Length: 172
Image 1: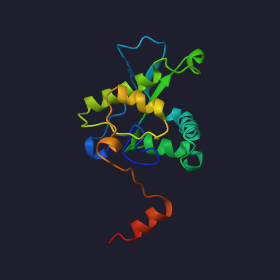
Image 2: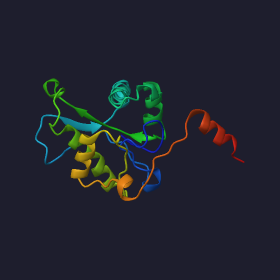
Image 3: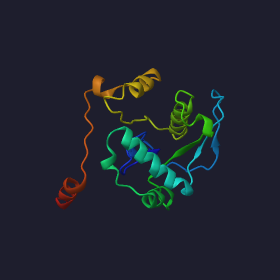
Image 4: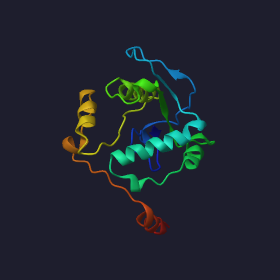
């Protein structure tokens, strides 16, 4: 999911300052180096129930289910309205592959996001990974990602709920 803000920003997000508005394409992404029987395509508004479900599944995996506050209606509004906040890819995977890891689906999704970034002349692709998720860290590092925590000492910060409202109240 490419996003500029919202509860999903950072997760495969591209910073808004680094890109122009991304056009939402309904065409399938064709990947030369992947031979598995799955397709990567741009999300449609009708996918939002499944997108919300997958956000929750990821949050459960990350032990952060209590932090998910977005509904499929908000995903529809924010992703498919006149000024979309995000662009999302969907992997259509045959039932027999759904329970198997290492079949190239994640790699294909990441490559699809990278392709859009390159096509839109983005200067970087930036996202977050939990420190205990070694498999994901190893995967991204094997693809050439840089760990800014280790290399540059960056910390990811956020304002939410009461702290965000309090800060907003300080605006002139």
